[in-house]
Image 1: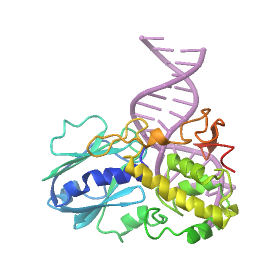
Image 2: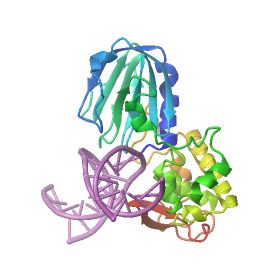
Image 3: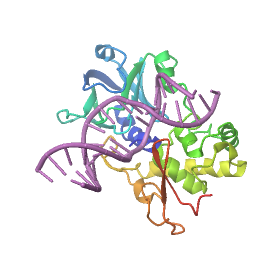
Image 4: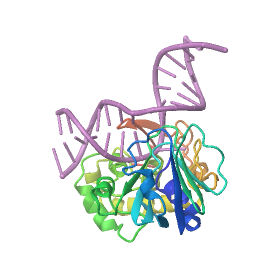
Length: 270
DNA sequence: AAAAGCCCCTGGATGC
DNA sequence: TGCATCCAGGGGCTTT
């Protein structure tokens, strides 16, 4: 479910409300991808100062410490003072003086990991190889082109890898490539400066638009208030195999790249 | 260094 | 209705 827009939408939906909250309890469900990395009791009394995002990770700044949350494929967060009894897929509760932050994650590819601070090995292991933030100042068209020149893999897979630019998952990789008019199978190194600049702009535009629309709700994504997103209604190619391209009418094609589905228009993307 | 495969796990859709 | 198969928004790890 969650790519950068969904993670950012989630962050925006509860960051202000949890700021200043003091941790009064932790409830763990079934194991997630990684262990928490500390005794739950060690978190008691700490204050949540802020919620940041790095790639698809949510970072809870504790005083002191850092809690890194990842939603994996099927995770979603809820923050409310009145939470129902935990269900079978509620695997982490952070009980605070301002409400309970709850992670629901049926597939359990998500994680909640503690680190003493951002430069600590526990944090570097997860955050250290991440590429540049696409919506930040550091995402530069010329540098993007230079990074692509070093990669021989298909551009779709380079976008997904997250070491050049973070946050672009399977939906938005297909959408950004459509917007830029680039075939997903194109070797990254063979993309011209002009086309790299178009892709750079497309990545920013598609992700920003998706944040505006509250993310994409394909099956069950919702923000921390339980509200769905609507970007999927404007998808040009994702999940539209066989349907007419919204621009030229040609049937949208579905191929597999690295065991992931890729959608594109053979007429609009060259 | 980069690329390709392999998993982790549950649930929903589809087909027989 | 029951059961098998395939697929899903991610990404770290191991092997080429």
